[in-house]
Length: 322
Image (tube, rainbow, N blue to C red):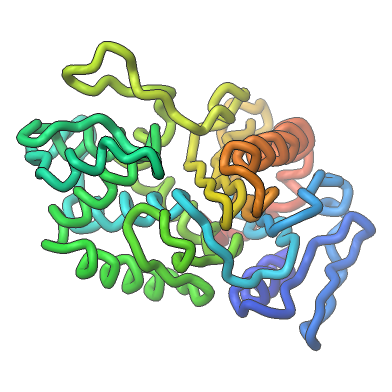
């Protein structure tokens, strides 16, 4: 398992020759990549991988269960905002229960709120909101204008903030990833499922980010209706995050996190991380997102039902992916 997890992740991050955990009990490779025998415990899970795009799943303390699809960099749409939030919190950490500094909404973010060409939040110029609230408004309804506002607040300009994003990606070993904006609207922001899996682990280790992505909705002062989380997978048992993303070029994308029972009596919890990219690319953003949610939901259901029973065999006393 240790060797399979390591090689799967290394091969996936290389952009080509990606390894795929096959249900038939072997890992298939292309372009001369090594071929490994998959443990029977992984094959027995029979995970319902999406047939298109690319996907990856990992388990805390175990490693990567599988990577499906060629790991070539593709647009990831608003999944980008996970890195935006991660960088903001690296630069301006929030302690448990802390809301952080108050940030004034600038004229640019307010003007962008009226855009009909992208997802935004109805913030107004001069409005004063805490860092935590702006993170919620950015991540839950996927507000592009708030992502750019936070980038300017953090680094002085979106361009300088993008440099920080790429620095963090490099530090995390996300070799197939390039960020060109804070929101993900740009098709030039690209990554792989295997790379985003690394970020998912880091994001869920950040308490303020972990708390935010688990919220179903958030209130915006001056607005009566709550802002809903676009990640409707939160309605499934055990799902505790993370982030949706969809454009016509990127298709539907979802980074998700699931808790499954762990321990002899099932009282513990083990985190499972998943990324699904490129679902129904070229269709409408709504169709793509619907496909990403449905196909991710099938993976979540299978893992919730089958993974707890094989965790002891997968653990083997090793502590990868804490």
